[in-house]
Length: 352
Ligand code: SF4
Image 1: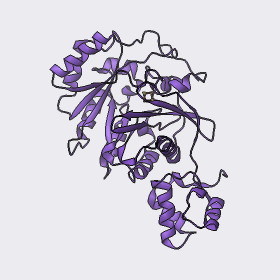
Image 2: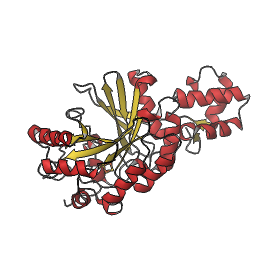
Image 3: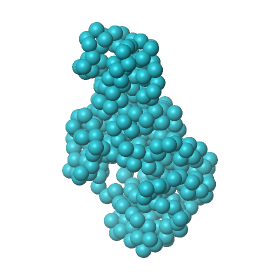
Image 4: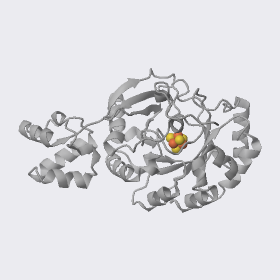
């Protein structure tokens, strides 16, 4: 592949048809190429077997259909989940996770190679900012893992909860969603944000919207600003107001993610305060016991099971639906950035 070639996986469907249609005819061939690219996730023109050979060669001379390469995959954990490390053209490394969940399968995608948001409990944030991923780099994670495990598309869920803040990569995220919708319904796709209010409002305007997950992690502004510096720019009260504006039609709910840190935000009083904070939202809480990592502050610890139970029970007593991510991925260090973090020296080290 030449660097100046357009990667067809980076284009939204209409733009692909327009660019390819300018050099390929008749129109049904353009449709075939679009389908091979966006629906079947072809990673080479040779894979497009119903196209004439000379057309495939011509396409390869003009364009590419490139995906990032897998450089490492962990052994499957006891629950079947498996983590992937991909290398990008510029040497950046990103992570994705395959998570079988009974009838359905989720793939967790990265949206940036690094993250400028800097949540203090997150290894990706610890390693600092990186660049936005292209649509082809996001779609490559999806198609590579889906194909490797042979998961039927109708069983797929997609979550943007890997490395990076997807709403700081809005343009490429929207293209990626448009392509994913060819195979996966919007209600099966979840975008997780640290609380970028302009991005939430932009997502809310889309005709076809993914589900929204919001990383809250503290029931009050002071503690949220301590562990999530971005909150100073997008305060908690304004964030809750933006969530109330996000359409939750057809029984859809917002997922409130809450990383539980022992002795910091895991008290019953914190659960009661969280319930008050999200009152009026159509939301469920996903409690995520902290995953310890040598790159993160030593005071951050996973709560005991008793503390987790107390937190959950208090939410339930206050009328909040709650799930707990108890084990999935613990064995494979599934919190974002942890696999890459084992391989690289950090660009900065926080004092906290
Ligand atoms: S938790 Fe998400 S938003 Fe926060 S630093 Fe990590 S990747 Fe970025």
